[in-house]
Length: 109
Image (tube, rainbow, N blue to C red; front, side, top):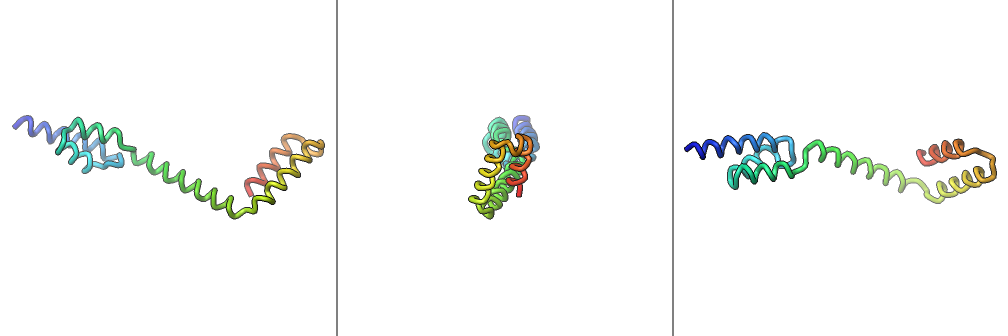
């Protein structure tokens, strides 16, 4: 009887550990209950945290938006403008800091 209650108790603890992870409370609890609390704990610890998953999704969204913005810009115009800026820098018409500022402005548009 003590073993059965200890098994359930530790399964609940593993469920609590898994609650802030992608496996969730119920997934880690039932895995612990069916297999063992140690196996459930291993799966809960190895699953990604919900915060890391949300950060990954946010990063993927930013990458998608950036790619969409790049696709909308005519690339040849940007390349031509960068070549013009490079030629101005090489000729001495603008200095390095002015070149970097103009380049940043061109790429951010």
